[in-house]
Length: 154
Image (tube, rainbow, N blue to C red; front, side, top):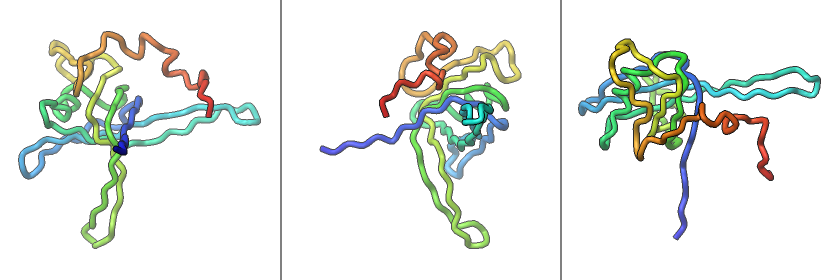
């Protein structure tokens, strides 16, 4: 049987506070804008940087309350780890024009910035979504995020 995989993994910073809304059937959904950056040195020895912006959608469904979590604990500038799938959507705007968007439909979120939100006494979950929370964080393994140490053969 042929199998396939649609998986996106991002670590980045929020460009704005989460936007949370309710659908007509009462489900809650949050949208965040996540920035990822890469840096390199060009041939002239000058340091270059490119930032990509990703639209991430987080739903309250199947036992996870991702929309509620980001609304309460995540804010502009926070660093997060997001895992999910890439989705493409089209729709007609009010003028009848076809619009396109690419989104990451999040299944898992790990907050990497520490305590967020306004209630400093509330417990802060560091990971939400499927699976058991890991005991380590990316802070424990800084080399895992070092793009200069890439030994991939292709």
